[in-house]
Amino acid sequence: MSGNGSFANCCEPGGRAAGPGWPGEGGTRASGTPRPPWVAPALSTVLIVTTAVDVVGNFLVILSVLRNRKLRNAGNLFLVSLALADLVVALYPYPLILVAIFYNGWALGEVHCKASAFVMGLSVIGSVFNITAIAINRYCYICHSVAYHRLYRPWHTPLHICLVWLLTVVALLPNFFLGSLEYDPRIYSCTFIQTASAWYTVAVVAVHFVLPISIVSFCYLRIWVLVLQARRKAKSESKLCPRPSDLRNFLTMFVVFVIFAICWAPLNCIGLAVAINPEEMAPQVPDGLFVTSYSLAYFNSCLNAIVYGLLNKNFRREYKRILWGLWNPRHCSQDASKDSDAKGPQTPAPPAANGQHPPPAVNA
Image (tube, rainbow, N blue to C red; front, side, top):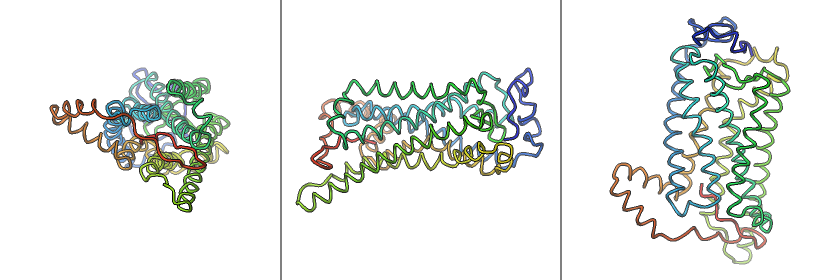
């Protein structure tokens, strides 16, 4: 893509964008053509709405798991990890992008640019790796229940989450050697530059998107096949079939996965197309398509908490309790005392298939 010069060549001593590839005072791009006038207001609106919903929603998710004993289980630790991945972008990169929009260019210097791009990558890759880990967890329990109890003992879950984040950091390290974290004037963001290295862009799309999506698709496909088989067998033998609540728990995480895939697919498709022939394809990518694909990707970070609230009654009830408790602290303290006397975790779900028991469902 045009205009992806290095930071050193594009910033004045004061840190203000003023060179090729940076939107100087006139709001022009590297090609010299003016940026479409709708980009700044549209992107600002998306970021403001996303940041507000992201912060409130993901804090609600984390507090819900910590407060509610029904939600406080090993499986939901992955949801807390996923919520943290969504939360970090709203606390650092998104506000910096809004500042860049206000100044019509990056005015915060190289350190913040690199750090912002790194945190953005940390969130994206951390999200997809956490979604993959959740799917593998569900698949192992239902399809390989014997091995599951060896692999997912209670103290193993924090180790698995640490491994997810370790792999996330390792996956980001090549960016610092390739210089692929730079400012892109079209979206006012410091981000991964798809034209920095064609082979690395292909590797990023393959390893950070296509491979995880394939793994998660396989896991959920196998889960739903077994659930359908169990229901069919239960009807034929007049046995209990899986409860609707258990099916909704699986459906919730499947919806989270589908939304993530939809929101990030356009940007990854653009990256793959550009990587095949950067010089020819990059100038042909319409600004509207590029900005829209990034806006859609940004918006994804606030959607998981909404999905949990819509599809999971335990999360929905806890959201109401927390919000009402903030409005009425006395009511909050009374609920806390009641919850301390409540019963333990949910009763395990009935058999899903072949006499195997589904796990205490990931309550999201």
